[in-house]
Length: 104
Image 1 (cartoon, rainbow, N blue to C red):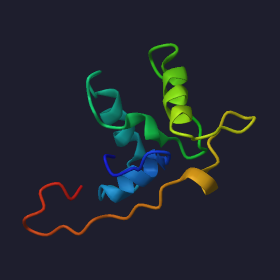
Image 2 (cartoon, rainbow, N blue to C red):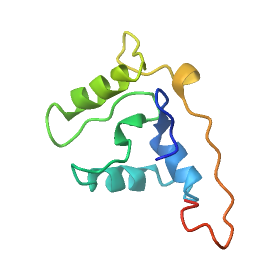
Image 3 (spheres, helix red, strand yellow):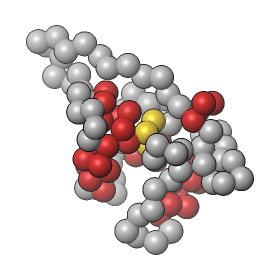
Image 4 (cartoon, rainbow, N blue to C red):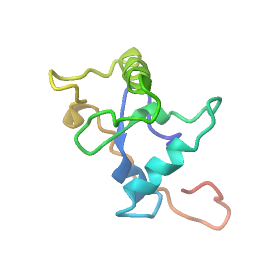
């Protein structure tokens, strides 16, 4: 997730695939839910497959994610979704060499 650039988004499924866990988008959601408040990870740049901000257990947290994305220049359409064709990050999985502990 650290590699998702400012002003871009990735989907939960995309993050799972890049981590070598295709089909495990829900696990990405669980991991993001477990992040501490002071985490520096750009959690707000991860949206669902429709480009929408997923509902949270804490009311109003969806608005914080939207505000953070809009502050980075990401726009939402009339249905409250990020146009993925425009803002989706086209990241690729890094190679996993022996010395690269942070490949995923």
